[in-house]
Image 1 (cartoon, rainbow, N blue to C red):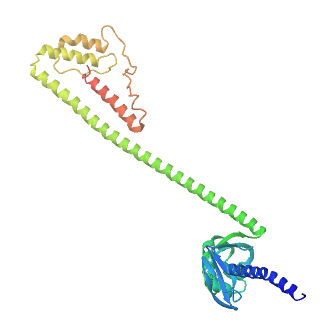
Image 2: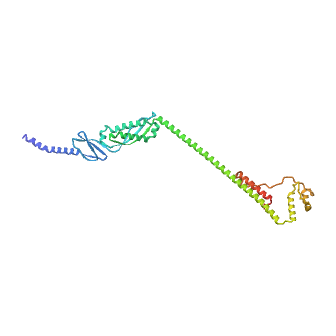
Image 3: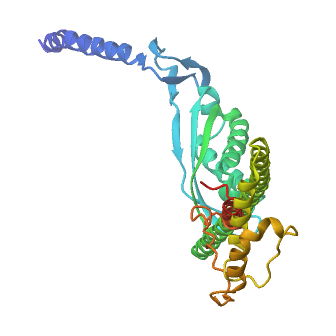
Length: 357
């Protein structure tokens, strides 16, 4: 009876053990099934040796022999490294904050190429930055960000190839010089702006003076041309007026000749001439040689000589009509005034010859 009871108990426990073993086997099998998500890669080892890289998808590993060493992200990473103190060629210490864009292109090299890839990239970036800035002066550093970025990208990309890392881009986020250097740069910038303002003002003044001189030059040229044209027109008008006067006199003489004037008309004209001569101001009178033919004119001659009524001779200057100038021409310079005066003289000459209506 004693041996029967343990055997019964063992028979009762066998199904439970089988169930436990089956559960463990199922769990083990499920743990060997892995799904790799998109954008990642798993590095697999077999008994401590590299076996392969799992890409995105469903995979199965051999239990107890294979294991996943590292899960690597294939996405591009943005590595913002802390500011680094850097000394320029002219011995100025500045702080530069850089950003590196990189991605893993070979998970095997990324796992076995270096112990800590990100830390190694950070230190390599700092040393490369110091080497590049050490060959440049402060002003060149502040104005050559693109050149520095390209140099750093080329150097880091070549240096990180054995690590399975591809450096796609490098940017300098901040360049911070010391405060005293910032104050000096601010003063320099202010002085440069003031210099530019002074130069611009001088150029504007020069252009204004040149423009004013050009305007005065053109005005004088136009004035000279206007006076020249006025003188030419004046000369032409004077010549024309003289020509018309003498032409009128010639026509008058021709008409007198064609009219066949008799002695009575000639005597009448002689009396008119004597009237003009003997206007009470003449002290000498020229008489024609033919006295017998003009005895009848002695009365007129006596009046002219003051005989008979003893009329005194008027010695005051003869009043002549004032020469009126054209007010429209007086405001046009010396040429206009001369033209106005000449026109008035021509008018007076015409009136004196009896050609005015």
